[in-house]
Image (tube, rainbow over all chains, first blue to last red; front, side, top):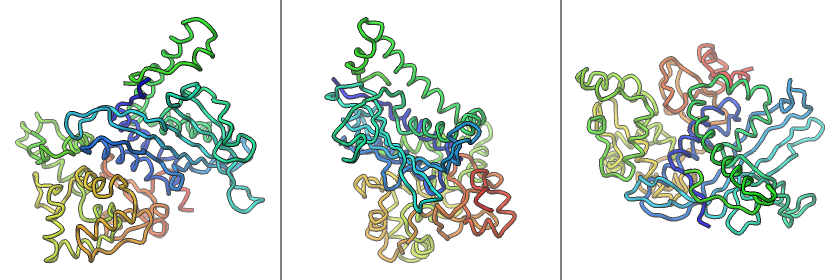
Length: 247
Length: 210
């Protein structure tokens, strides 16, 4: 099975739009993270050679959200002060290019993982604690599925969810680092994010069509699979999409 | 026509990237450029492009990108050694309309292309950037100690040679600052002590003033 492809310009536009859209919800020290990511994609695209790179938001310099003071519940009714940290690694390679700077697509080379960590400030305890972690991933061709999945913890040997246990692989709909970031912001700021998304029309008008198109393609693919008979979940779990699903 | 007037190098690997950057900066349409005898383009360059960090960068924003002190780049650039620096960056220097109006500018797309090549795909590594600047441009360039440097504006909203740490900067929205330009920053301390600046701090940063 060929590797899943994405359109360079679409991903650049997606990062650019989300960078503006999310600005109010990003911690001051992280406001360079998405612009840097966009620059990395553009720079890679405009190079002559075709070699794999890791498109990365590092754990050292993650995309950090603003502090959510209980806003993960409606009416800010939550009891924790938390913020999210999003890091990501996608190993990618250009599909082809006729001349430098004109590559239209890139493909994933096995690693496509976006990690979310929720960090808690606890007045009773000094310092900051990680209170939740999960990874939203796109599988490689050898994975048992499902292809677009979420794994909980799994980066350390400790229980629960030690790194020796890759299950459960929960189904996932958020694929790119920015779409994962939107998911996180919507979770941490239940009221504010929804209100915000009704206001920022300029950037929303660029962000929404990209997401709508990708969601449609993903859901139509899944719909096609379950229409083929058999147990829907077992069918979805076993299948990998065509490399050109999103392009 | 725009490509020609802005002199985007036609065969550069970063040509399309530069074109995309220009497109995002709301340039006047070709037809308006023609019917206004080019005045629309001049107005756009003078009012919306050259004074700001857009698809063109002046020495300050170039220095910040390379993690070096802007004052050291200015000193070298406008001294005898400046010719050497200009030569290294010659391929990326803006040579279109109004190129000689207010000091040299460089194509952001070209500079990023150069940085990626020279840092072997590690374009935000501070040591790699500083090594690049000092090895290829001038040994005397002074590395910045700031982790994530941004250019600070003065109280007239003009860029200064002062770098500030991103986490201790607040974003302001001065009148006329183009939406496609990089953000405008002042230090948190400056905004706290200057009511004019404080009034311009963007909503997400306002809470940090108190």
